Length: 264
Ligand SMILES: Nc1ncnc2c1ncn2[C@@H]1O[C@H](COP(=O)(O)OP(=O)(O)O)[C@@H](O)[C@H]1O
Ligand SMILES: [Mg+2]
Image (cartoon, rainbow, N blue to C red):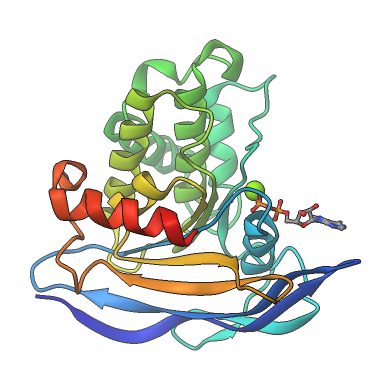
């Protein structure tokens, strides 16, 4: 069993226009989900075709870009989102190439947790590096790692900032299938770190996004309208298709993926 508790992210009628409308009345809510005896946060995806406006929405959700109209509220007090308060893993995540992996991870600890001593910082990094299979990579430089490993460093760097909300833009793209499965596992592990951790994924990858989410939204265009909006809400919890590490091999799940690809 699970319970939908209070709203912790609310997107209210977000519109974005340049010379034409990109996003139209995008509204959705993310609830704090609790389950007895399980410490697990929320995983939500926004899924849509390439060019539909996902990266623009990602920037708006992170407070990095102002919408033309509408608002994003975040946290248990639902205050307007401000740049820097959510962790972001952009599609072309940036690691500093002239710094070691260890130093890159230390950057994650720069802000909120400065009260930590150097020794405590080192221990925290070691703990995460070991949990996510990066212990042997700490002294290396980004270019000496594979794309998948670099992405993991970038995600862990955001975890270390202590932000409860982490937004990821296309976390499954540009990776080979085996590594994609590892990213799915990593994101589940991160949601398990803290009951309040909330991952918001924007992606065009229907299967991997749904496999990991408790709730998903489809972003697409409606006939006769300019701009993308939420056209479908998928409650995977209600369908009994969430929190299952072997979900991809389930028939009902595969049917759902096929059905939703049509609605994209
Ligand atoms: N600064 C801008 N001025 C005008 N159009 C833009 C600007 N930034 C993005 N767009 C347009 O917004 C649309 C959505 O882009 P994007 O959010 O990157 O799509 P997605 O991430 O879903 O592939 C694209 O058609 C793009 O050309
Ligand atoms: Mg994009």
